[in-house]
Amino acid sequence: MHITCIYTLCKHLYYTLRAYYVMSMPRKKRRDSVDVRLSIEGDLFKRLERLKQYYQIEEYTEMVRFCITDAYKKIEHRPRFEHVNTYDNHVKILDNQMNRIAEVYFKTNDKSWCSLCNSHDCVHIEYAWTLPKIAKILREHGFKSPSEKRSGYE
Image: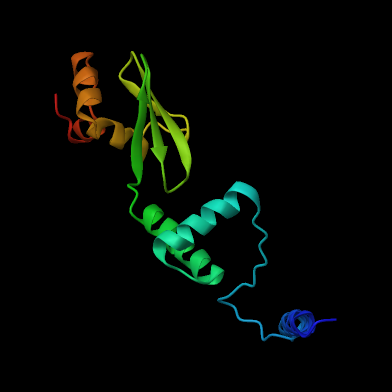
């Protein structure tokens, strides 16, 4: 056996045993941490490698931390409500806090109803009235906004 083969074998054995030792060491549990073992293959691995090169990150651990932080920043800056679509008799609103879609229905007898809250008076109905196009159409059809109903405005 060549000296380089022995060296390579010893080096491989050293890193294998070192990795086993580190993995098998008892660790003190912390409430604010989690140990994760992740296996990434195929296209996802290729994407991860491209991201590492682009952001010049050497360690996979740092790459995972970066991705989590970046995703959290995007979630943190999302508005609570987003207008999804408008139909003949209702509006769909995405509630990012509840992570659900609310359907606000407008009935001919000046009644609004939210399918998510099962209510005639909720934040989703209030938000629907803040959308200028929706408010204009509703006023043209004789509807009153919740604030106008509360104040008694005619």
